[in-house]
Image (cartoon, rainbow, N blue to C red; front, side, top):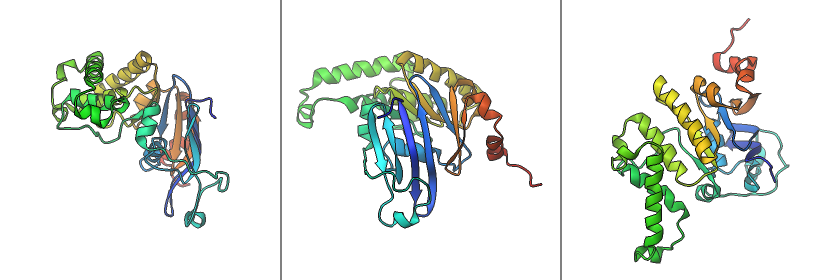
Amino acid sequence: MSAHVLEVENMTMQFGGVVAVSDLSLYVDEGEIVALIGPNGAGKTTAFNVITGMYVPTNGRVYFREHEIAEGYPAGKMKKLYGAGHAGEYKRLLKNTPDVITALGVARTFQNIRLFRNLTVFDNVLISKHLHIKAGMLSSTFMLNFKEEKQMREEAAALIAQLGLEDAMNDVAGSLPYGKQRILEIVRALATNPTLLLLDEPAAGMNPQETDDLGRFIINIKDRFGLTVFMIEHHMNLVMDISDRIYVIDFGKQIAEGTPNQVQDNPAVIKAYLGVDEA
């Protein structure tokens, strides 16, 4: 059992002979904004996919608060192919689907926007509210859950207004400016009532002004909703401005961890991002 909000313990994710994430261990504490950074292809999104139940780890385990939400070990052909450490330490196979993990309080966004582009802003948010619906299929079909549905619609509208998208509530999501689509995806994640929010490159494709606005938005929602935030991001100004701590991975392996000041001066991080000339 972990005392941290999120704890990743010796996570390895291997696809055939390719080790995408190797022996990754990290933690995120209550109220923190923690960033996971690294060059393209370093394994960042793969780590997010394990945490949120899209993949079962090849080895290692993941805790969310008091819940162990994922565990795996090398089995079958992978016993021979396995290319990372801590083999034999984990004996349990535990898989939770993304909806189960989300219902526990873990919400995420994606590197590529995954809105329902042909639905309105309101309907995108309302769909997320249905994660916690109590009515069954029969009562929903015959509109017997109208009180619950009314409450969810009111909550969805209030959340949209609270976060500055009220004027676009009835607009089709795909018609919004790119920056607002990014914000809408975060609002939709918040509609699931998370306590841990995972953001996968939330500033991707944004201009400098939009990125600055996003940084303020993330801090605002963290404080307003009592969130803990774990994010992947390539915009280093954003990372350095709002992160409490940073983990750096390269080729699936952790190479640094610390405060923004510690990380930006780390020779291993500089080498991973910029390379070094051969002597």
